[in-house]
Image 1 (cartoon, helix red, strand yellow):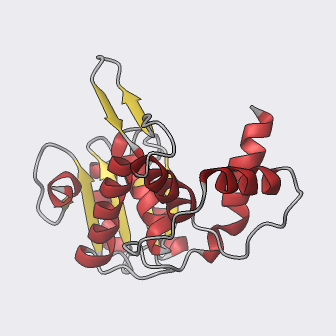
Image 2 (image 1 turned 180 degrees about the vertical axis):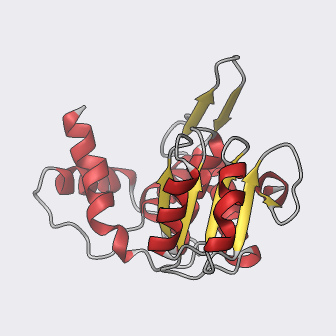
Length: 208
């Protein structure tokens, strides 16, 4: 597990600042052996970490292309199961497509630009990962928060970061509403909820 984290997580953390490419632009398809060997060498410190790295493009989209070209078997890229047994299973291609939709929502509908901060307060549901990857694609600063945050916690984070967008679930929307008037930089509120609310956009509907 430690080696796996070193190979995949450390390069992402070190190079996330370099995310600057357009999220809809296709990438050239590398030979699968070369792709795997390069990242193994980087993880082991045998090659330098690339100056520009975008996990969504350089890993997720490349694996999707390798699957489509028949260079590797199709396996789930994302497999989520809740406590009641309901599940969501996406291939690399499906996860890429859904995360590009989320990126288009953040940029097109919300009007966010690279470097803008956005706060996400959701439980571990599929939308959490979609927004995370969408931020990688668009160069947005992703600020995750637990649903246990109080209104005071959320207020501090929104004010300190000057976040322009917040994504919230049903249980934390009342806390956000109670302090939103004190956050002048906040322009867009996205909800993950079955109910409609005035002043909130539905992320699920926009992803359709």
